[in-house]
Amino acid sequence: MSSDPLNPATSLLARDRVRRAQTLSMSPAERLAAMQRLLARSRALLERNPDGLAHFRARNFAARAVGRKVTMDADDS
Picture 1: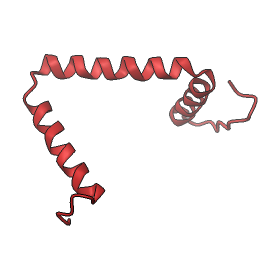
Picture 2 (picture 1 turned 60 degrees about the vertical axis):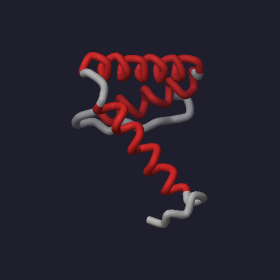
Picture 3 (picture 1 turned 45 degrees about the vertical axis):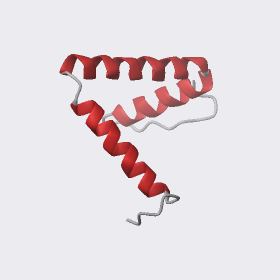
Picture 4 (picture 1 turned 180 degrees about the vertical axis):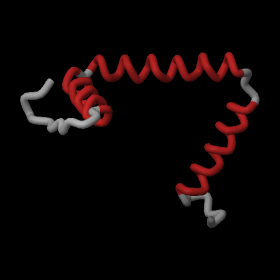
């Protein structure tokens, strides 16, 4: 990696180091609470977009389908 400050990879590595250090300094309960907040924000974002939520559900159920082929059509919701 280059030490060029304008290189996005350099910035991302620095950001990841900081986030990793922050996460390691948290207790298990704090990490669980942070994950619950992330899931709640993700769910709220999906629920604000009905088409996005329908697409997510179709992909999720298709990925979990066992022994059956699931296709997505424009009419699926």
